[in-house]
Image (cartoon, rainbow, N blue to C red; front, side):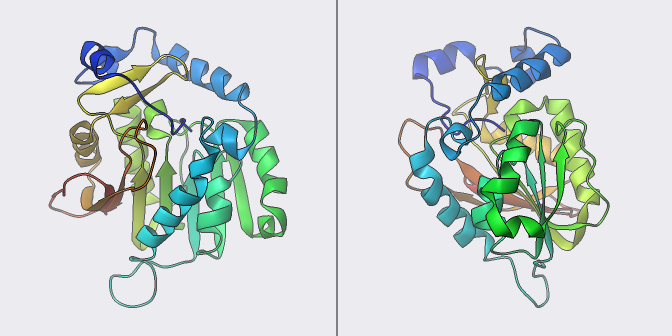
Length: 260
């Protein structure tokens, strides 16, 4: 997962922005991923650690996500089921505990850092019994089980994937969805281009770049909404929901729902 606290001066953004992620990478892919793994191994397994020192925004984040997601869940035509969700870049289970477990019968977690997943087993308390799988794996290598998930939640982690690996991961997520299932992406977006972060070995893409990659994955953004009430120094955080559909369209900024 990536920190939520991405921020950078306008001058730095102008100097360092790229149109494609690969143009920003100096090292090879192996180094790009290994540096990120080393970074997260040094991060304490706490809510504050997961949020890059911005633990105070956790409730704002969760409340916004819950209000957003509940619009699409329930029974009836076109509604998304509440059986099983996947938390991608789950860390210690902050989102699983406060967003996904209250809404879904079971949840799976996937994260590249084993220490975070070990901590999740105690952090989740009694509700940990409704977590069926703890996958220790980078998303570039993760293969969701076919037709298992009603919702795949991807938050503050896509910056740790190269463009090609992000497209491939989203394609694999398509096969992991149940009927009427949703892929939700909630992440920082840059003002223009692609901004590299050498500290945690990640990038921040602008919304147009993200939309292009979603389109390449064969997904359609069906809804976007902007997260409100975050500190001004944090990049914009839109949420997107996706399903697989035949034609593609997009709204301006915010949460994005993609239909398969």
